[in-house]
Image 1 (tube, rainbow, N blue to C red):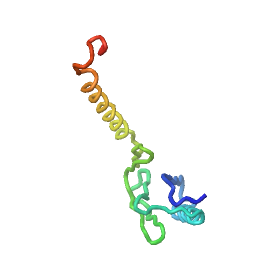
Image 2 (cartoon, rainbow, N blue to C red):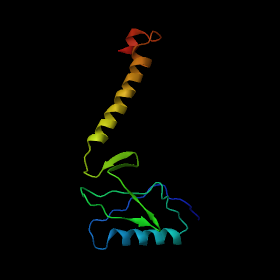
Image 3 (cartoon, rainbow, N blue to C red):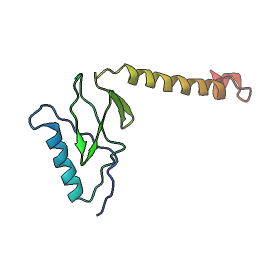
Image 4 (tube, rainbow, N blue to C red):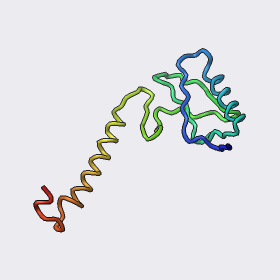
Length: 116
């Protein structure tokens, strides 16, 4: 089986031993051996609550350090706050309810007893 791209992957390093760069180099080598390609445009570095982020690269490309990113539909922040994720879910629910109100509850095409 030949795969050219893996959809989503997250690499978590919990300590400085081994350094994150060595961990990423090993992952990159393993991907290359399997014939997989890492999209450098879509690859970012996020460090939890650290002011001096490490300089991480793949080959000669230095990866961008970000404070948040979306992974599998969820927003992840470097301070591990869920506020933005909760607000996004509330916004999506409010949009769905507004759509229901306009299409189902406030329509003349349904009988009044159906709407209750």
